[in-house]
Length: 140
Image (tube, rainbow, N blue to C red):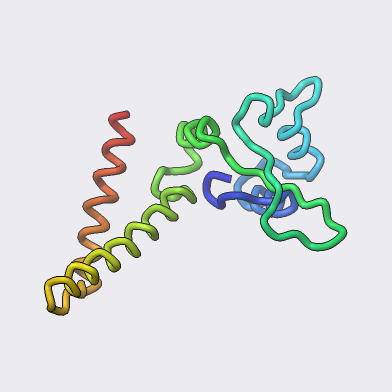
C-alpha cells in the first residue's frame, strides 16, 4: 500500500505476490487486515483504513484499503521500501512539478516575458526540494 496507494483486496494480493517469499493467498492477507485469534487486525490497530472506492462495478462489493499516517510511518521503518519510492512521495513530486510550471508561467505572464524552464533546470529544482524533504524526514 505504501508503494502503490489505495488498492482493493484483489489488487493487493497481486501486488504482494511480487514482493517476496511469503505466499500471498487471499485468505491470509484478509486475515492480516481483519484480524483473527492469532493475528491482530491492521484496521483495529489503525495501520490500514478501509474505504469505499470512487468507482465500482455493478454487483461488486469493492472495498479498498489505504494506509493511515501511522501505517505510512511504520512502512518507512521496514527495509523493503525507501521514502522516495512511496506513493505519497511520488504524488507530491508530481504536484511540485506541476506547481513549478504553473507558478513560473504565472510570474512570466505578469512580468510580460516568457518564463518557461528547461527540463534540466526544473529537474535541478525538483532534486533540491526532494533532497530537502528526505533530509527533514531523516532528521525527524
